[in-house]
Amino acid sequence: MPLSAVVRERCKALLPPGTEIRYLFPAVASTVVGMPLFTKPFIFVVTDENIVMLACSWLSHNRPKSVHWTYERSLRLGPVDTTMDPVFTVDGSPFQTWDEYISVIAAADAETTRDSFPPDPLPDL
Image (cartoon, rainbow, N blue to C red; front, top):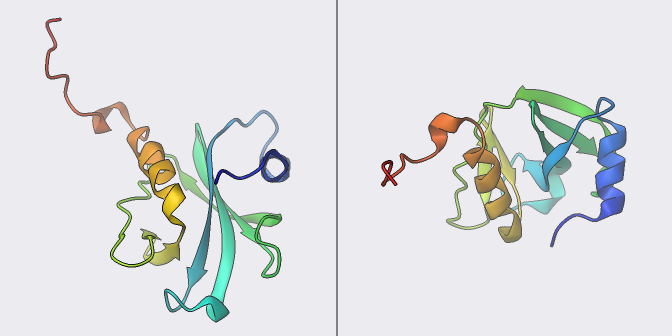
């Protein structure tokens, strides 16, 4: 289920003016994947220039409070390990997300650079 327009506006308020949000998805960082007692919620915002991690409060997963970290747009978020719960790794830290956001992560990764696109199988057409 996509994040609501209200959540999108809350995220946009923490970004520099004029920043366009390309992709938006929630994730939780945990010391032990699958243990909900030890999690910290985040919202990942993918823009044209950066990937921004917004920290949320422990009790309100859809209310970003601050910019936790900013990464270069060339950072790849995938692949997502779907062995159990969907997990991806950023800077060596595992983040757990939900099944419906796997395609969002894949789409964000597909747009990192033009070099990441597969070669055209019929370039002469």
